[in-house]
Length: 438
Image 1 (tube, rainbow, N blue to C red):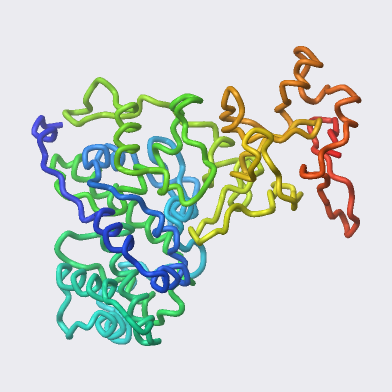
Image 2: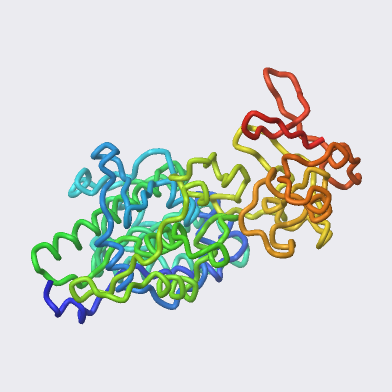
């Protein structure tokens, strides 16, 4: 590779800073409209002063289409770690599943007049106003408009269209620096149906196109100047799947994952993953290895079930408002804890998805224990008192005295399991043994 590549001036239309600046000032009514179209997770997007372009360039050179999927499927790998459309929903809390957003080659020159008219009408543009700068300026104007007496139905529809245009072009799937891709306009014809499209798949599709363009340029010895696609997704997904050590790994205890990754966090973790050598003059990464699949909340996780990690609910994928934590902790086999659980240390419900249970009935948050427990399951942890009684014995060999001890009334006392319509007392299966909670 030519040495000049290390001195390339890279640009990208992907600007999470622009998105955050606008959505952080939304009124409650506007936030509810964002949630109504399935994009609520973006309300959790933190401030990014900028996006590391050299890190993004390296990631794009490491992206490959997933050969195990059908050629038309939007799935790939980055540095060997597989990613799928649902992973975009986990990172950003945007719609996954549903109808595919029309592909570029299917609609080029065929975008209906109805779709164009809908978008132009929502943005207040005249026919022929197709420049990227003009469209984004108009979309931003619609999003920032204030309504003292509430929004009329026409205003709501215009807001939905403007929001999708703004976040697609500034974050989720920007394709060009000076022009707008019209392909997704077909999915905006009916604003009330925006959430029925698979926007996550669309994001992956554009990322794969971007990686293909970058790699083709390198193969032909051409300079790469523009990085399109959602490079922020690649950064968050890649770093969130790396093993930085038990003390430094971020817990996958909530979604959207973008909430845990601001600019400083990404910069710090990317620096830890940087290698000492350069690849053809380019800054190189890849020092860390991937986390175990069972330790992450993404599609590749072998224990994933809905929004569960290691059997425990990790949050709302759409980033909707939650009043505290859910009363239910749902296991992958269908069992549900349906009572509030109090931590013995802090005395509060706190983060129920991080509660550890001892066979004697003790309950402690992972982050309240001393030392802090970063990786625990409901059947592996035992309290200090039980450990003292058993010496070095494991939690599944607790004495009958500890197992039969009566719990305080504020602790979880029962789990209900429905099997063929019959309610049974709950237990946790471990190997060939059953350990009862009550």
